[in-house]
Length: 128
Figure 1 (tube, rainbow, N blue to C red):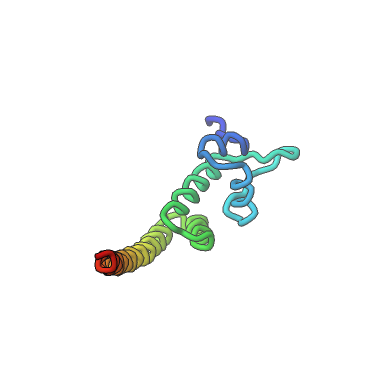
Figure 2: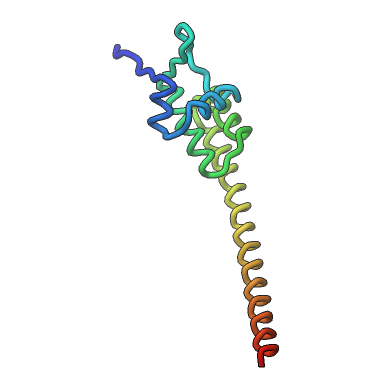
């Protein structure tokens, strides 16, 4: 049996380029649960993977509640089917929100271009 890989908070912070404070925040939110040796946090390989998932989820727009649900599903359904379906559904919902935002931005930019052109035209008329 090989020894279990462990990490300090500093090692995780450096590896993932986050602050120790961010890692403690995720711990406070119940997303990470390191062991304690004396007063020091000791993170295992599972914590390493969870932090990786947390950061990836944050990048694609998952809320802390959605991340908690994803991790909870993984803990209760290790076959991963329920977790994968939840992740897929959540990604699709976020994707639809982003598509809508993009359409809204494109509409706003078109409106701005129209107003910009009209104002420029009026300035030219006033200058002549």
